[in-house]
Amino acid sequence: MLERSDVLAAEDRVRETARHTPLTHSYTYSAMTGADVRLKLENFQRTGSFKIRGATNRLATLPEGDREAGVVTASAGNHAQGVALAASRIGVDSTIVMPENAPISKVKATRSYGAEVVLAGVDYAEAAERAHEIEREEGRTYVHAFDDEAVMAGQGTIGLEIVEDCPEVETVVVPIGGGGLISGVAAAIKTETPDVRVIGVQAQGASSVADSLEKGEVVARDSVDTMADGIATRSVGERTFAHIREYVDEVVSVPDSEIAMAVVYLLERSKTVVEGAGAVPLAALLFEHFEVNEGEVVVPVISGGNIDLNTLTTVIMRGLVETGRYVKIRTVLEDEPGALEKLLAVLSAHRANIYGIQHDRTSRDIGMSDTEVEIDLETRGPDHVEELIAAIEERGYAVEVLV
Image (cartoon, rainbow, N blue to C red; front, side, top):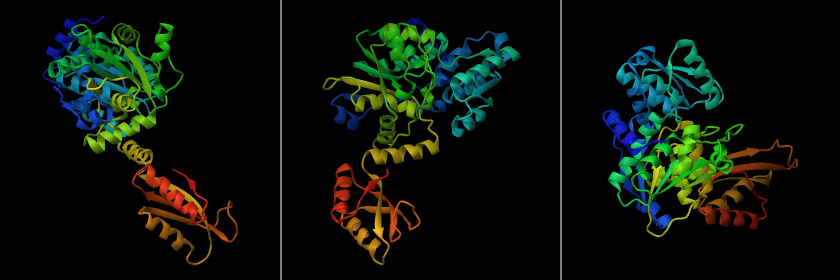
């Protein structure tokens, strides 16, 4: 088990490479939750993620012979960038195996830090199999993304910074993928301030810890399905599981819809770009997956900001839908002059802004004298959507909400 001394030693090793990231109070999320919310912004870290901490500490402890042979690892993206940069800084050759569907932005960033990138497998587990093959074939040292005490200790330096910058902290909320981050943070905090509560958060589509805790052993999922690719692992590690059992007070999970909402909130209200994995602690807080007291000092660890632009576009649209600021409807009009104008007059009267219209006379689902219309609308919230649909239906139109 990690000792505080391990994390303090890691702090000395990573200081020149990893930044001491901001911890900022949020009036918005404090007002929304009743807690005193401070965000630990690891998305401002070098490489855009906390992973540089653990990677730097692990490579700093390599014997000289292992450095000469080079390193290999598997990662969905953030650990890849951390290892690539840490290796380049000390002159170690690195090969990174990433899943074939890894975000292109993370693949390009990893290559830019000097690593050779190999794409293999549909997820982290299959990428790791290929990485271990390279380890055996080339005699490289495998740098595990999470189940390694040197990596865990490096990540734990975040816990030291939280306590230093916010000694009044009462609850720390941390994302869980493989468990390296929460293991290090929890060990750093609990061994010094045991009364601080540590809560772990997983995406529902990759939630293995609850079953593992219930059965008392690591349980792996058959597959994962979540927008939070940074924590899309089938299971935690054996070492990290032991630390979770020892130090973590509670583990919850959040659905992708809430993760998307948290990403949108951070973008719009905090002017901060965050990936899905980085948003899960805030999602768990905002959507009340654990209890907080009035004024309780809560620190969600915003673990990274490396979100793919295509994913961000989808997330923004999902967020607009969830908040009632975008809706797509379908209705059927009589195919005659002025029919569309009458419908548009209703939309205009209720201040709905039109993004786009699709007008189709050829649909098999309508009569020969009808035309099908799909309209994309900008709206002002759930109440406005309800008001708008009610007004359209009052005019005799049958409305189907598509999105």
